Length: 133
Image 1 (tube, rainbow, N blue to C red):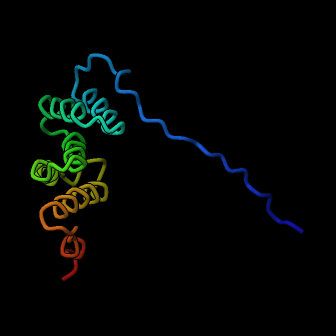
Image 2 (cartoon, one colour):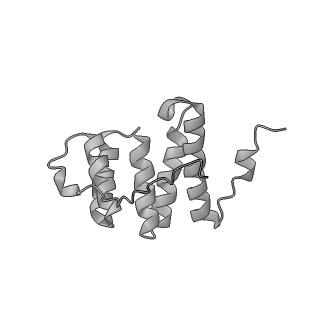
Image 3 (tube, rainbow, N blue to C red):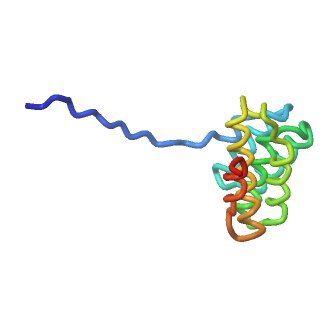
C-alpha cells in the first residue's frame, strides 16, 4: 500500500536575460540589470562598462558594486575586485536589503570574497563569532 503519490519532477532550463533586450538604459538600475545580464553570458568587458555606469549614476548602489566585484573576480582583476567588495562592506548598513540579517549576510559575502582575493581564504571566523565574547 502506497501512502503518497510519486511527485512529478519538472526540469527547467535557466536562460540568462538577453542584454540586448535592454535598449538605451538611463538609470543605475537599468545599467545594473544589463550589466548582470552580460556577466551571466560571460561578456565581461560589456558587463564592466555597464556596471561602472551604474555606480557612476548611483555611488550608493550596493548591488552594482557587488556585481562589479564578481565580474572583476571572474576575469582575474583581483585588486579591482577587492576594492569593489570593500566598497560593499563600507556601504552596507543594517537597513540594506530589508534588515539586519540580510545586510549582515551581504556584508559577510563581500568580506569573504575580498579576503579570498587578498589572503587566499574567506577567513570569516572572527567576523561570524564576533558577537560572542
